[in-house]
Picture 1 (spheres, one colour):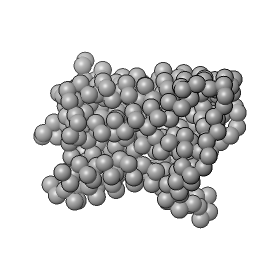
Picture 2 (cartoon, helix red, strand yellow):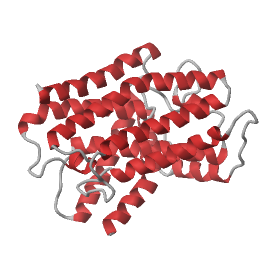
Picture 3 (tube, one colour):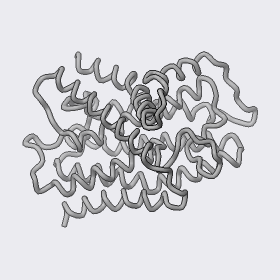
Picture 4 (tube, one colour):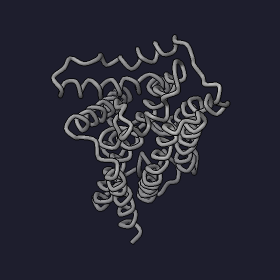
Length: 302
């Protein structure tokens, strides 16, 4: 019971803190004091108090986009085990549902952008689904590889691995899966070098351009949902990088949170030392993730 309460508190409260850690690390590299780690939560609270402006040309799809995005990432987050603790909602085949939940969120986000009738947001939606054509198969193949390694078809078994742990013979596939998942995290969460969440330059905007017409509480929901997506995908990556259990629940939770902090710091470091790729080079980068996860799967079935 306590573990269930802790996992839901983490799912709801910790994701915006992870974005705050990323921004703080970037500020340190830039030699600035930077915003506080809780700044993302402050922004969400401020947006919740603001008014809402909705264009007369939009339909219910525009309002449904943020709501569906938040609902889908929350459901996806409830299916994933945290640290060594199993999810109470897992079932056989939930890995398929998990993958399609992110696809459903993307469908409604891009549909909401197209619903505004703006050619600018339509451009962003086109870029989003084009790059998703490469990231979604990479994520799916990475999960299939872990399923093959664990011999399970539910996320609890896939991410927690076999009872005796992975053998040394699986090191190469696991390294390839970790590389693929790292690229997927950067791409799906609109981070550098794929996208820059702080840019407003027309030639480089991808995700940000799709939500330009959302304001007030709607934009706050979008920000919260984006942080939860970062949290969920980072959790999957962490299971590959840090598959350990101490046997003590309190220590295991601390290790899990510390791992998420480490992933956030890593993303902040990457964004500080790298520049955003030119748009025509992004598909090559994402193809690398697809090749890594595909190669890992081939190594297991050869």
